[in-house]
Image (tube, rainbow, N blue to C red; front, top):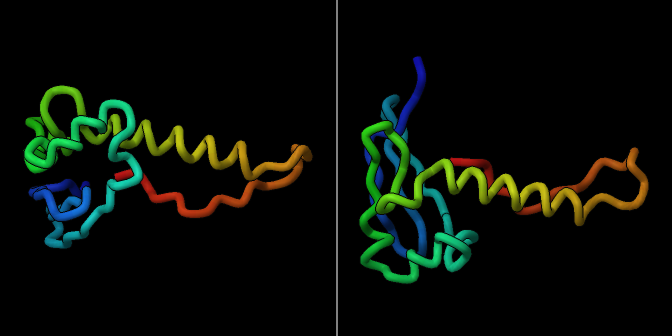
Length: 103
């Protein structure tokens, strides 16, 4: 059975609380995205608090921000960290620090 978010609510400091179909919940810190690109919309706290689950089950704000955008931005961040952490030797494995998993 696929576990999906069933509820989402805004919390302090660019955090959201997610509840899942298996009864578990977690708090996710999105502060690493705040103020960047489309996420500048979160500077309006009232907008950040409009977080909801879309008809398709995505975590969303308005029409332009949903969990796919968050996953993309975080994937870009991971790639950037990998590029910075890799030395000139292509056989080296990059060390990645402070990378949060996608939502």
